[in-house]
Length: 125
Image (cartoon, rainbow, N blue to C red; front, side, top):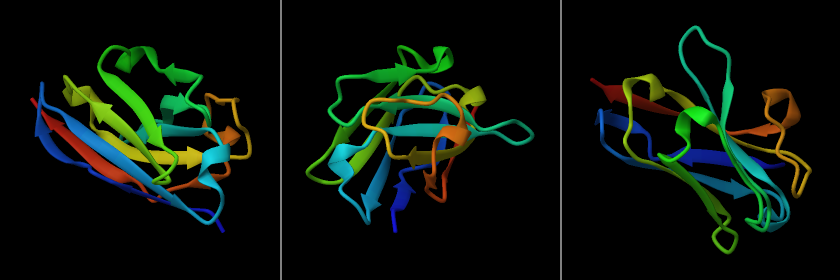
């Protein structure tokens, strides 16, 4: 059973930074691509960033390019999302996700089987 646990969310002022973590257990973390999604109230869940198993491939949504950075530590079974220059429109519940692919980074939630419970990020004006 794959388990993903997010942490690091919170309340921050616009322009501030947060670092989210996603701790994985239940299978060999090193072999699989992973992604961060977010869902704001009343909106669909959208991909924020993704990373292949060996960090060779990364993806960022246009809305976060240049502000967010995805990374992973395969020895610690943990993925990270460094979020800088946060904006009120970044307010959402952030989820980590993974599936059975090494390099493929699906852009929609239907491409991922395993999800964490989410962590709330709130950016005040």
